[in-house]
Amino acid sequence: LAKTTQPISMDSYEGQEVNITCSHNNIATNDYITWYQQFPSQGPRFIIQGYKTKVTNEVASLFIPADRKSSTLSLPRVSLSDTAVYYCLVAPLAGNTGKLIFGQGTTLQVKP
Amino acid sequence: EAQVTQNPRYLITVTGKKLTVTCSQNMNHEYMSWYRQDPGLGLRQIYYSMNVEVTDKGDVPEGYKVSRKEKRNFPLILESPSPNQTSLYFCASNGRGPHKDTQYFGPGTRLTVL
Image (cartoon, rainbow over all chains, first blue to last red; front, side):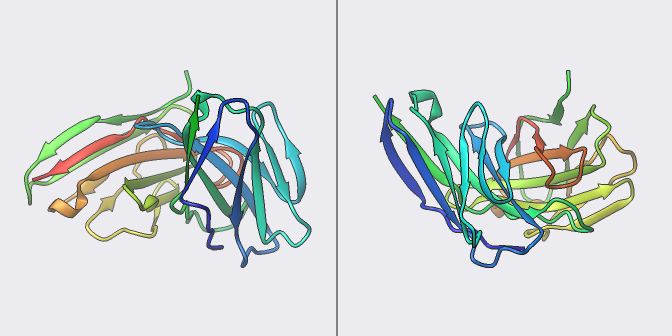
């Protein structure tokens, strides 16, 4: 499984765009990249998933360069309610193993 | 409503007293998994199950047991809890394999072992 590295913490202000980068140098050909968001005392919830280039949904965008050794989660115009821990996860969509490595995550603090 | 439930939500126990944390999902999911979360360490996988009667170790399985006798339930068993197992525990399930789309997480169980 690919090991991921994220910044431990980030600060931002309301209304700004926030970009959180995740490094995954040993990503495999069949690996996908998924980001989760976790609020205090709650389970993580899915934000976005992608394989390459750019993916966008109503919550965020995910940018993946051609070499796929990193990915960037982009949160447009954050609000105080976006304060949470964000996890990057790299794993194949299919296969015979269910092992998943979440890592430490990035704690995002949005200030007024 | 589609959900993953865990019980109990909070538990304080003493060293060596066997306990079970239950996890149940109502989505007919094949894949289920247990995680523990500790400050500064993020989420770490304890055990997972690809289907009924199929379980395997995650990253931190020592001191834990699981069973998957039926699809909806995946209990986590601590035969002889120790203080280093004090943690926040999450159960999760996914109907399309471990990594396809989203895992659905339970509300968490906060365990304190004295």
